[in-house]
Image 1 (cartoon, rainbow, N blue to C red):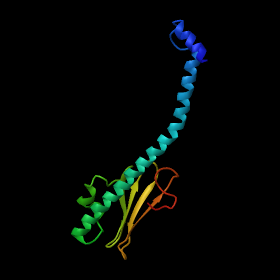
Image 2 (cartoon, one colour):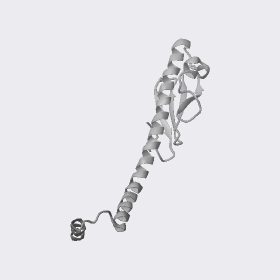
Image 3 (cartoon, rainbow, N blue to C red):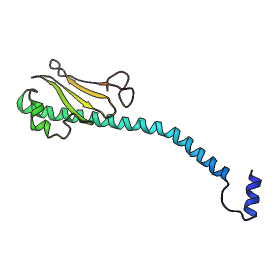
Length: 145
């Protein structure tokens, strides 16, 4: 093969043969087939990171409400929460499904289908982080993040 290439160069022939072009296209196709699934996995991880961030940021807004009112009840309707920029039911946003005087639950919704929950225990004051998974993205199999 190298001998043929050398002969073409010495004879002044320029350009590529159809076989050479097909080989290059085949190689590019194989590389794309390898890279595409990896890219799609990174996309869902990024969407999950957005939902986690929204949930954590909403915790700050809810705690700000609590510092003023000494209760979590009514936090969902307060300006601290509604104007936080992360409160809502869309992808990449978080909601407060439950709130009592000493506890709350916040759910961040990911575009990948995963939900990330932060729950504050009213008795101990400890927050736990759990997630539900669609078997893609950044929700570990343990269910805790």
